[in-house]
Length: 241
Image (tube, rainbow, N blue to C red; front, side, top):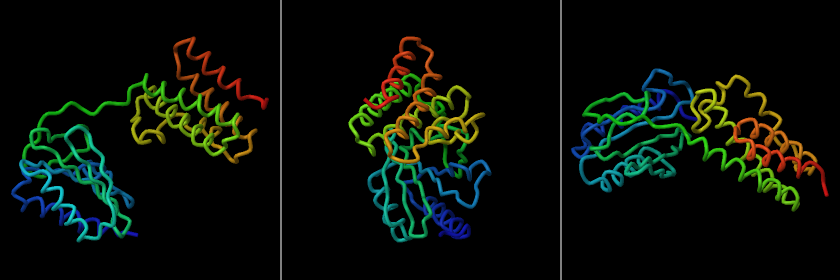
């Protein structure tokens, strides 16, 4: 388990590495540390503005992280930006974002510029409501068929998918962050979703959790026909045939 002092030391090393890399023209601390909300469990979020040789910078910084104890990494791309997420041997997570210099800037409040210049960027948006609704009912359709086919673990997966998307919809409705579960603990009645948790793969239990999940989904749908159809999915899995 990493120590806070180790996290601070590594972040300082990364800042110094950025300051001495001629290809890096800007850097920022992002995430909770940028706004004074860092705690014992926080990871390192670091953003680089790269003016030239992006591939070379990524390769060299990956080698640097491996030398510092990284045991694996995951890549997430958003347009031209690469977010490389490193897992350290100490279990610390380190996220390094490699931004083209002409796109580098804050997309939200958790951005503290260390050096260089930041562009004015539109804020990152919330998920699209209609897409969340569509994904939720799609998971619900497959949850029902999985239950009826006796594919119990697939049913668990699909019910969980319904819940995740409905919780995001509730976040949108209440005006809290709907990405990566960040606003879930700020919901006024998050406990209402406890009934969607599956306690066993018994078909009766799967049907019970599915009914709760689809009922909550229906509460988030304003279109009458779609709402009725979702409720019909729930009724269709109410009793074994």
